[in-house]
Picture (cartoon, rainbow over the protein chains, first blue to last red):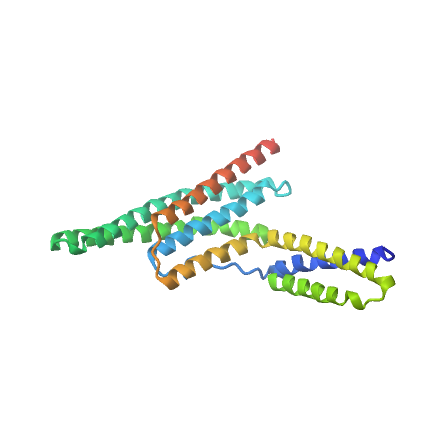
Length: 151
Length: 106
């Protein structure tokens, strides 16, 4: 190659350009999967997957030797607070799905059975709503720490 | 970002198409430069993918939920199990990484 420096410069430019484009200098757009949900179960499903994605990213930060130990510990505290809330959410959504299935199965039954299953479904829905709301704050705290670090 | 990658790849492909028009004495060198550029583009693409990993994951989840909402699909027990398995796995991996970091710090 007669002009190795030119070729190297072109290679560097082409290497850096897509990486810089992806950084968007503070304008990285984070989609909110939860706001796309239209039903309670879809909302819970979105919260679970989004939380898993945040924890996966937090793992990369913690595994990075360049991350200060104080940041790693703050992430650890946030994760320890958020994961139990997410586990409670999972129990609530499982109960909700079971109650909904029982309500749908009761459609051909007598009035008492229908009323009982409707009441059970309403209670399960209320518990699920509460669990989703309770999980929001600890998840947001962990997500905030991850975003601040990835800024 | 992916649009930019695609545009650069298309640009390289278009430039490669002009190779036969390049004089014989420069053709080999031009092909070599295009080859280096293509390899650099591939490396740059993988670096960029790591940088916006979380954004891409959240966008994929949102697309999944949007599809569910549009079709009126209900979440199945299997889908919930899969989501919770992902949470547990991520949490276990995170805690292991934190333990390792704490051990390395002491």
